[in-house]
Length: 294
Image (cartoon, rainbow, N blue to C red; front, side, top):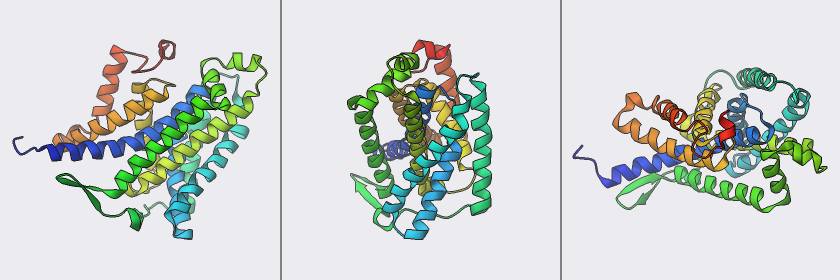
């Protein structure tokens, strides 16, 4: 313990923040969909994996990382629109378990399609040439790509905040998340709102998968683990709370990173232990509304 320096701690914190940014993006998409549609989307992890594979395929075809970064959310948004319009919409008004079971099955279908189209083995994928290497930050160096992920996530979150807080459509989203019936009474076509929100949540999941590809690998089952992590973060932050998802995602990224260094055997369970404590002490999560815990 005496050999532990400030630089080492800072390195672990930054590594955790980079990982936390992936957590934040996945949990944000999941929270958007739950908060507005009240749908627990078990296909979210499969969409994350699909985004990674679409991005890798687009990169292999174009040779340009930045073009691929644009292709992924567009394709995933179209997939999200199709899913909401033709699979989920007929189930609205029924018991909450119907869309839950549908998305659970859809997740397996998407993963099997990935295996059929791309094979069962993983695909090697590294950061683009412009983002390879490390940058010195004081007494230590840090990978450029992870810094890019952190900056890109920050820009996305600011854009999402501006969209939700400063646009007329965002006002509808906030109102619908609190009381969808009131929005309907006001004469707003909620079906279009739900369609766009599901598309947005799916697109964010796809972007997270592509950004995570150089950091966490590309395999068909990559979405299974991240789905569990996203649900844990969503519960810790508070179901339906975007600020909660952001805070919990970054916090869990740092906690996992530091635990991996000092007590690697506990790194796979520390998130669940924290979630258990949060559920006991504050069932609605850090920033969740009390009614969400009922």
